[in-house]
Length: 466
Image 1 (cartoon, rainbow, N blue to C red):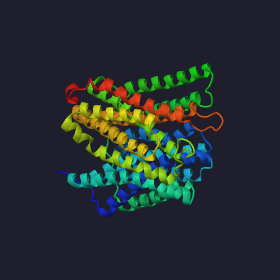
Image 2: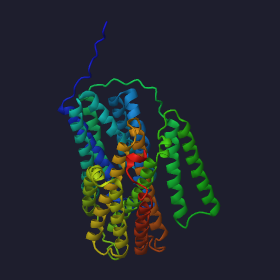
Image 3: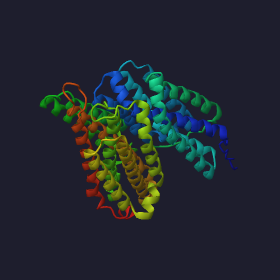
Image 4: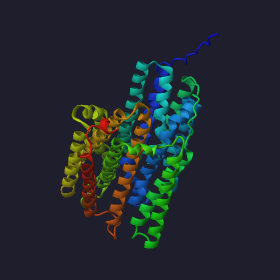
């Protein structure tokens, strides 16, 4: 006796539209902090090191939730998990919009960081309810709107912060997220969970989160306000090392690890890991330095730009990043990964070294952001695409998740180092970063980017080394 297979119900354009506008609102909420960092520093009265944390804690949450979001969706149903994550994001957005101080704002950002898991869950939903061709088109719409939301946030943050208050930068996208989540609940049918023997690596998630947070807080303590005693510095280093060692031990023994570190035994993945880390660390420095210099007082080396102007000046770089992400894989296939990464590194090094000596006009910084964003985007995407095609099919998810986490860690580390440099070279009287601090940070970013040239020479064809 045969058993009839019941196909999942199809979804229509309204459901896809709800997912798309949810992605748009999430992208907006994620991007409002960058152009508003100088404003938030002034409003909250915090240092560069503290300001870096505002953006970095969101990225950290995203890095650790991404590898488990898909597993949760398969186990409990994509719709159920997506709605649950959006409830957490909404709570974080509302908390940030009401935060009277830095600690509560940071907590709000931590909760908002789970938004990164929305994309794989959206992909699960459309793939279950649409044909292959239709799901590819729907996924393209969702990704495009999430990216577009980032650009909206760049333009939206300043006008709202200056016309209303910075709290509304978080409140307005959160209101849209709540509305679109309700629409998804109404329009999207429930998807049945998929039975799986793979366990979720909660110890690995917890230890990676703790390691990253301990490192960032430790780096801030060591570099800020004259630093701490050598004994305290040693204790911080030992604590971070212990957490990192415990995480590695857990991942190596886990039946279904969050990040399968055994993939690093493959030369292609190991090289891609190192290059991705170096490239994103350099770009993380750039991403923090530019808004700070744009917003620095105009009576010195800065330009006194407000949040709206900063968003406009950063927007071309955001567009360049989107374009480079879309063509990185094509460029790798046509010219080879080594050539793409080498050109990107050379462009970044030349741009940073030039900027260290010449930063007297806004257009110089805006052009530098475009060049570095394009170089970083095309390089990391080329590495991601080459790795995905250079490993066995069963290892694609493991390898790409490792690179995704690496991109976030590199970006977070780079931004924190940039903030530490600005704090270390701050004027003791005014507390403002000096021009030499920015020149030093630009030089360091160029040196970090140059490190990739030491690794890229080992790359031949990614697939040949897998």
